[in-house]
Length: 93
Image (cartoon, rainbow, N blue to C red; front, side):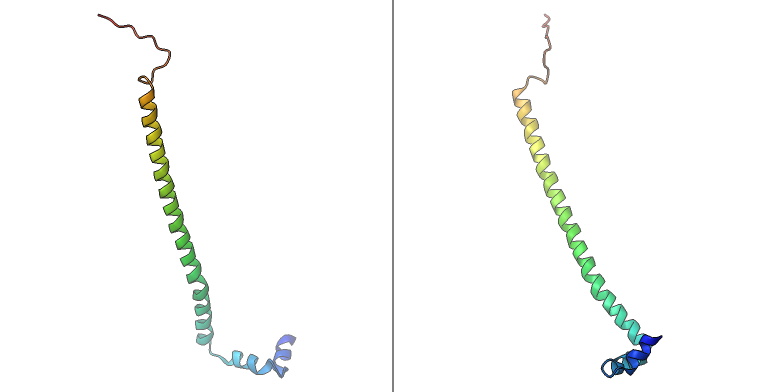
């Protein structure tokens, strides 16, 4: 492992490398967990907000489509005759 020897003997990086190597396992583990949480929590929050916005948009557009469909149905009912076309009606006494 030549790179470790290079880092240990380097005047600039050597003390930092030795300080990192001497840290106990729980400190490193805690640092990694804190880093993971700092990345994961904002991603989960952004995904949750995106899902909520998508749900609201879906509901609003569905309501608009329902209203338009109802208006079209009422409009057709006013201007059509029982929905029958090309039907001959025989009236009996």
